Length: 261
Ligand code: ADP
Ligand code: MG
Image (cartoon, rainbow, N blue to C red; front, side, top):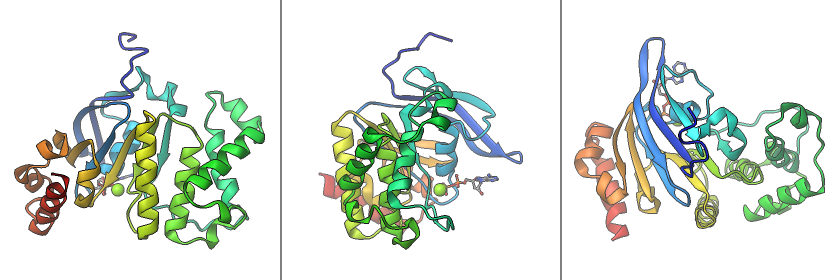
């Protein structure tokens, strides 16, 4: 179907349905993302947030539905999407430096698999990687072994890797979970810079305190409970449906939304 090829909609999911062993993990998920916006997927553990990102990327078989990136099937536009999976614990034995890890972001930039395998990083790649590390405040660590870093520092390195891919869409799975305050600040200022530059960001969080930072929120619990600007979508009733009435969380959401006004 070529009807929306060349579309300016960065990401368009239609009717995504995913199941594991006959149990529906996601049911009929449809939504669009606009350029220059930050969308948050919020929901409790097990809601299918990580599954949704993986489904969007074509990493999981779909029971139904399709995903287009700029009007093309995601597989054809994969290099325009950067992905930082949820908490990666680094226990690699081989000696890989921080700079090596970030340079991996450059390999995904071509659509040709052969080219990706054959090419060596050049000066432009190295420069892009170093700039990405600088943006995340990690320049001083570039020659360190990745294993020598703290969790928050490793998270910054994975974000730098995504950044130097120079993708138009970034999918970030719980980038703020378990990071220190300094890392959190750096991540938020990076997000602001990227959205200002017209990039499209989709971020997963189980923490409602980020509501006031979002342009759009998706409340997810295997299906979309609500999607829209936080002040419209994150109503008490919708949050209760999403979280099943865990009231401490509702107070947290209210505090975040009050902060916004
Ligand atoms: P969240 O990221 O919102 O915490 P997940 O997307 O990780 O939730 O998981 C949603 C549901 O799907 C959970 O019940 C989980 O156990 C199940 N699930 C996720 N991945 C798999 C898989 N590869 N095989 C079987 N079940 C899975
Ligand atoms: Mg998850």
